[in-house]
Length: 120
Image 1: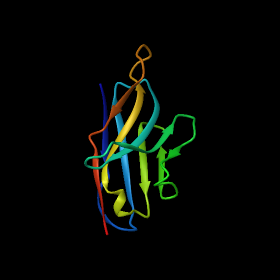
Image 2: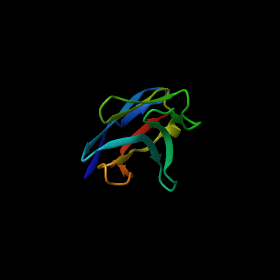
Image 3: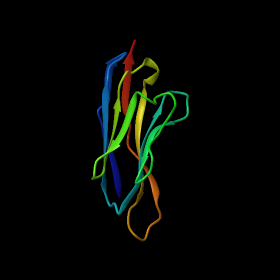
């Protein structure tokens, strides 16, 4: 069983900053990649940024230059969000692609989501 626990969401004014954190716990053999997605009502969940193990980070064009994704040496991924805009308002979800054990295929796991609201 794998769990992803997000924290750090909240209400901020335009131009402000927030830092999201996500910790993966449970039965984990290897984390292949971690990512942040976001979703607003009536829209599809969209990829904001991802950070594969040993690879290059990716940012959606709408957040490039304002958001920074990073990982520590354990099982935590962060999303530093600066210069926030009202259009960044969404529920942000943590995603991790994990092999729970050496004998299982990799699978995607999701957090419960954290609300980010940017007021104008």
